[in-house]
Amino acid sequence: MNAPGRIFASDSLISYIREDKSLEQVMNVAKLPGIIQASMAMPDIHWGYGFPIGGVAAFDYEEGIVCPGGVGYDINCGVSLVTTGLTLNDIKDKKKLLLDRIFQKVPAGMNKSKDLKLTKSEINEVLQSGLKWAVENGYATEADMRNTEENGSLAMADPEKVSPEAISRGASQLGTIGSGNHFLEIQAVDRIFEPEISKNFGLTGEGEVVIMIHTGSRGLGHQVATDYIKTISNSGDLNNNLTGDRQLNFVKTKSKTGESYIGAMFSAANFGFVNRAIIVQKIREAFRETFSTDVDIDRIRTLYSLAHNIAKIEEHTIDGKKRKLIVHRKGATRAFSGEYLQSGNFSKYGHPVIIPGDMGTASYIMVGRKENMALSLGSTCHGAGRKLSRKKSMESFNSKQVKTDLEKSGIYLRMVSESTIAEEAPGSYKDIDEVIIAVRDANLASPVARNIPLAVMKG
DNA sequence: ATGTCC
Image (cartoon, rainbow, N blue to C red; front, side, top):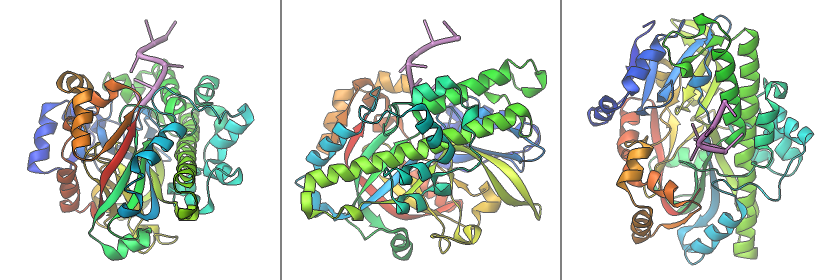
């Protein structure tokens, strides 16, 4: 190993890590050349391809490497949270109608977008400029853009490095949810822990209705990851893999392939930001149709949108020296404090950090602690983290039973595929409250608010 | 995660 492993967990959460191969994966990542500080893992860590899900690893940007497996297949898988200004009481009679409308407008599962098919040159613009394209074309507001990581527009994106196959897969997937753990959920703010910060984030108070979107760059990002993992493993260079696991292939950032991957990965990330923003627009339409003039559409706002599968170029202080690093976060969320951000909307407390739970349990809005820069390169968890493999979940849960149980708790469920529901049953995941306590006690991030689900749609 | 197979 070229660096130690550093796992953030509580006594009870560490027991899950002993049960799967994620500890071995933390060790594999630690073998990568030039790894800075440590191969890190968040409390929701679990087994993934190559890197563990919940892993963080950084390398020098100029001299070091980039590893597509350290980002994963769903590039810019991430979360957006939308505030409505409405209370639980305002929507109680229309909860089902609202979710039905959204379900009608936002394709999930294998379904594609019917009304939004882009030409090749339009897709190139999406990949190049992300949310800037969405704002210019009426698919997002200026405020949506301001409240998105990097304004939803990664400048180093290079659409020419995205294969035609990836582009064709993405062509009719903007504004879609997908399947697996992706979802759209109507929630209510259940508890506010930090009233000052929650106000700064744009929350009105306990009981406010909010909407959470969890999706990424769909087939487009998946194809980008597949393309580059294949290119690197077929390059014949025996020095780009030390572990035998091709999902841990790496290349020098400044090599031709390294620069191409970064340009393609950032393009896919821009696509992911636009994907979530278009879903926000569809939510606005659904509110307008459901509440007519009773609701102020301008009040439907993006609280924040951010990625938890991405590699970013960031400046960090390492051994007292400022260095430009490429920080891989796979199933880990950026959580920068106000001190680090210095300017912009959230420079007072830090940017909002959105942490989804599984369906049926709570989700959190958090804020990064300044101590986390030295501890985790400004990172925190990305969710509850799986406890059972997809296969084990399918064997253990029955989708009809899951739906009945959710409805008993007052949670309305719309789904495309029954098997996804069994795969994603709440019992497949760790206890989100436990993960949040571990993150808080490790000084990575503090809870600002806790949300509970009212209605959920899945692929 | 994923047109769950090149």
